[in-house]
Image (cartoon, rainbow over all chains, first blue to last red; front, top):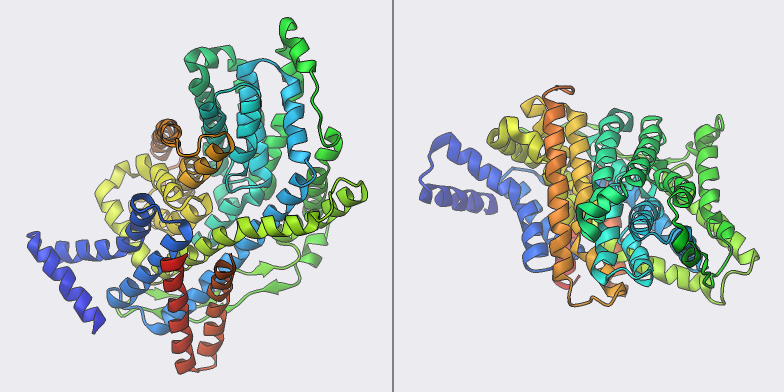
Length: 542
Length: 48
């Protein structure tokens, strides 16, 4: 009954627009396929719903359209739910353990100790902004996500005398380039999972485009502070940081250790910051840098948890046989072939397997436990710390996870019902050769609308892949553009900016901050679109 | 927070129950579980 009703309503609508025949039919199917994404966009942007509520609404619309218009039957929809749940568990394993590690260290005061160490490095304002707002924010994005870099760095910048607006804008812009390979490369893992392509196939162009966008982010936050004069004055450190951080991320990503890409880029940037700051230190300002403030612990202990993290990841990656032993226990399901009434078929095959003891989430879990024991033995915790860590982890993790469950599920249903393919075919027909120019903007739009780079990659990953295939463009390049745009879009996520503004006393006055960040985000995303177009038609032809 | 946690657990684990029901050929149970999942999503959309 419902399918017939929906189809009748669609054809009535199109008839009113004067369309006929095949064009009308294709356009209506395209509109129906776009309905779930449009629902999420409208609810989040126009009605200011959170990701969890909007995602669930998008899920309901997807089910109705997949069944009513695309002819997906009960087994197809049901198996897609299980595939989506498996994929969600894969990503949430990382999300929750990364949050736990962050709160294990933050509870000791280690994060503010690291920030204070950076303040002492240099009294030069643009350089401080670059080190804290870009390099330190990148490092923080390497170990935690969900607004943590902005929430931690903004108060530090405010304390150094920067305006509240700059204190929020700088880390918002500065951390975004490293989102894809930061936090155990959750977003990149999600992209490989939904597209079904191996990570090695996607790392090259992703690391290149993200490296270039990193330089642009550094330049943008300097421009936001002091215009082109600030960029000219700090050009050499800007270039050095860009080459070091982008280079380290590239080397690790292409070398197969992309889970450490963003984290190591930030760490390398911090390592370079020490000699660089000394080189640029001005004599008359040196005394200010020596002024010491009380910190919770020595800097060495503050970074101890992250050294443990590097050691664990390196051991699992490089010790022969260790990964195979830990990876022996896997959680996975096999799925039968399913098809829609319109003839779209999904072949039989396994879902995303989760290696319980070698998964990036497991590595974060080992680190969290060891770091907690280390800090506990050294007496850095106040009574009740473990309970506070658990509560704060749950409070941050539950809303994010709830949004992710529904969004991943509806993205998988859209893919399995042929809706994503329909959407891609329509966009490919519309933009055709100009598509590469807009591909990063699509990723950015996804991150803006869902508040998450991972969700953007989940929702638009398959769509971008299929569009690239239809137009005949390089798939890894277009997927790199997707994840680069999604990373840049995370600087615009209203929820993150709200968190940042609340830490510097700008609550209720977020508008100008969002407007400025939006301006820089749009310019960088368009520049990346131009770069992708150039590469697509010169070097990386499809 | 409690409601959100419950909704999260249901929306994460109902799909696996659905998978088991379908593989066991229990179509009616599968239908009921799918309806339950839709109800969970509806509550999430309306109440968050």
